[in-house]
Image 1 (cartoon, rainbow, N blue to C red):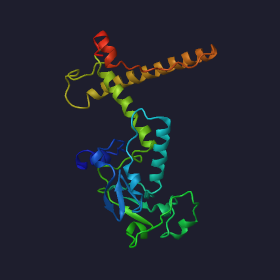
Image 2: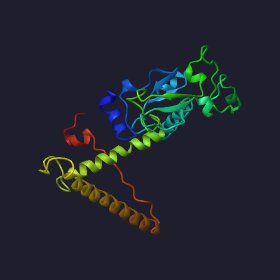
Image 3: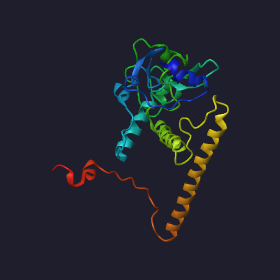
Image 4: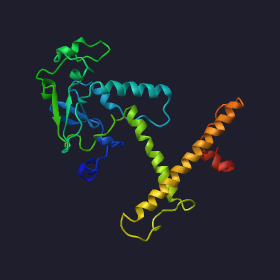
Length: 252
């Protein structure tokens, strides 16, 4: 439920970047005639096939990545664009994509002057809803309360931002490692949040300095290899399969 996770974080000023459960992806009702999907509002005439877009699978090829980026960009053209930031109560205003200049629609005559490279709504709603008749619509915080994010899900910008999670998890595991900083459960006998906070901050500083040292060492090594006419050193990830682990005992 959004009141247990998303809403408290937004009240604290956090801009969410998160993966969505499969049941939360795609169309999730409407608001003022616009389609609620993946945390955004979309034109009621958005092609249904675009809503089937899911996160890019791990290990996708360059061609698959490019196709996914193109589809994400096409879906973004149908999005109702923000024209204001959230006010103190979480309300904001959005405008029709034809008003924003990303879509051609007969209901917005000025938009028909846009280049044909823009998507065109061929059959506008017979009875246009509020999102099609007003220049802008006020969106309350209850709309897309669970799924609204800082970036369009699951587009290129969202993917790049969400990838930072792995770095955060690595830092979290590193400072808990008994062989390094060791701030695992039970490391501090002082109760509360205020007193341990400086120690945790110092632990993260140590971790960040280690990352900086490793980065600088790689830069020096790469510079040396360039002078020697060698390509930059890459970090290969080798996977050891079940057959290799089993060795001679592997079944035929």
